[in-house]
Length: 150
Image (cartoon, rainbow, N blue to C red; front, side, top):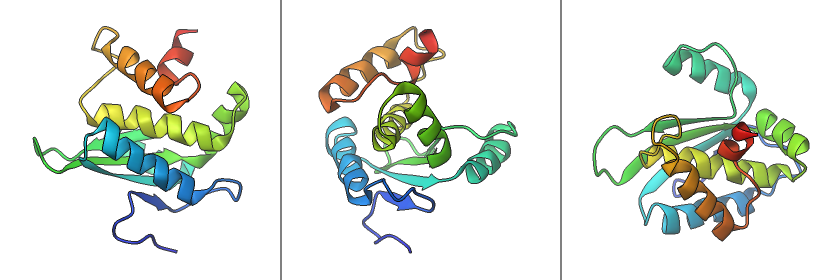
């Protein structure tokens, strides 16, 4: 089943207990508030596809939870694309004690901040601070950066 053209999220693989409309709403909130109207696309799929994308674009032959692909054109209306693994999201949600839907939202926010040019590996904590502010505002549990620091 394909999504309407105006959809921000394309669901290729999603567990039955995840509400598609809720994720679409969350993506619109991110677009309206975090990116201030700039568009992005998000593919929600499985480990196999994330592994293929990770291998093809990053040279890493393993699955991962989220990948960000900037559009490459400065100041373009489209920031870029995200790809999220539902299998990684389900495992991480179970590990950290929250619902898979929340984990998908955490991953979407994290990937989107990368599309906005933030990089937690090189920015001396700026992305961590920005992500923490948005997580509080959006009522999300700890994100990827906080977990890595434990």
